[in-house]
Amino acid sequence: MHHITDPIDRRLLDEFQRDFPVVDRPFQPLADALGLDEAGVLDRLARMRATGRITRVGATIALGAVSASTLAAVAAPDERLEEVAALIDAEPGVNHNYQREDGWNLWFVATGPDRAHVDETLARIEERTGLHVLDLRLVRPFNVDLGFRMSGTSHDVPPPRKVDRTVMQDGDRSLLQALSSGLPLVADPYAALARSLERNADDVMVRIKALHEAGIVSRLGVIVRHRALGWSANAMVVWDMPAEQVSVAGPALAAHPGVTLCYERRPVEDVWPYRLYSMIHARSRSEARQVLAGAAALPEMFGAQHKVLFSIRCFKQTGALIKHDEAAA
Image (cartoon, one colour):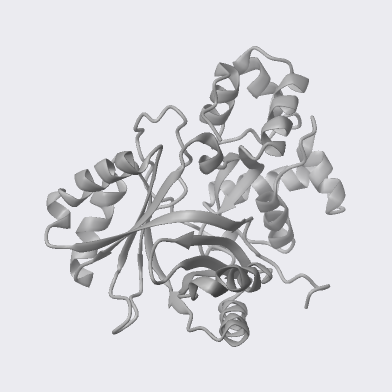
């Protein structure tokens, strides 16, 4: 895959990853900004979705806001890699599954409506694969899901938004599940979404605004697939440092240009000592290593050992599982 060369496509991907309008015809303001008509914007987005450059126009949901999730890993023997990856992908609660360069070679995110659901998923994976699953629970995010600049220029990192779970109402989970799957690419997507949920369109828009305002929807907009856009060097870098250092190191690392995600997770005694996690997305491994060298040189990171896990291949990438699917229960 290659970089986006069309300047309007590039702007569409660059400028509308967040704060997507919640109005009757949300694609019209995008069209006005880009000097296109509404149909032209919809056509471009549909084409980029079909070619895998974007996954959806929709929401990312704040980690742990309405669902439980954890990062997990297994060490699959090389000759069983495909088989084990398929067993992991078959779980509806697994929404990302990557092969990474390490003994712990399959890394996935398990999500569910609550922690018990996640535990059941991990237990089933252990049972079906016969492999030990590392369960790396989130302690706190330092920055999460900031969108992704095509231009490669660094941008001001918005601080993590406080998440107010008290605004949740009946029906919000189904709405969030639909938003994280993506809006229909039609002129009136919220009305279409409301129809599919057998709800009133105005009511649905009021709820989306409230959930966005409360930080439960962490981002509403174009969700890009960076790998398909030429940002093919995706490195997870894990850092081993004392718990008290994380409070200082986390924000410094999160603000470092090129670091797209940063959070603290619980280590696993005697197996996996790393507490601080960061993602680096770059166009090449050498560019990723440059970002890493700069990050490692930050005074706040002094003395921390790190390990780099480049991703080799993506087995699965979907939205989170937020509500129980009655049919699957």
